[in-house]
Image (cartoon, rainbow, N blue to C red; front, side, top):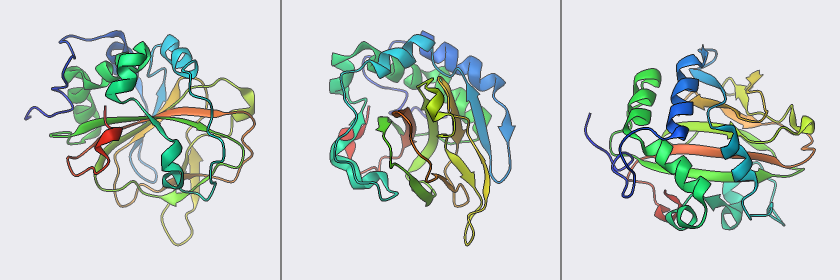
Length: 225
């Protein structure tokens, strides 16, 4: 495997930090589901204190968001683990270091079959409020890996996980990734990886992070870690 920018990130030391350790333990135990496409359900992919620290970041939920089924409609309100935020907030730096660790990248490739050569890490912090939904979609081809980690233990959000769907024309509902603190889902974007979030009430704030490895064709480089 050739070294990629996702691995050779400046300031990342060799060896496994606690984020990498906990993720690798989780990934090894994650059940692999194949219906209707390959996906892995996650339990405790992050150290618990990282979930708490992300929630405690001084970013309020967005005000005036547009709920039309597309995240890109709110691009001006979105938050990323950029180099600037890594300098300001230790948890952002720790998570980025965990997912740029060479052992993490190699294990993702071995477990999922993803090719992360010459990719870049992108992590978004999402705080979705009542009215939020996502239309059925597949991730764009420049995303080579998608992982969602839910952060809240609010019982009002138990039905707020990502929906796993069959493709058009009916987008038949297959199941949902269970929403809960430190739970999540992985899939490798492809033409059949249809997913979304239904029109369900969001009772509280649906907090999560989205971890992607993206190719060098990613246009909005300011979003990258």
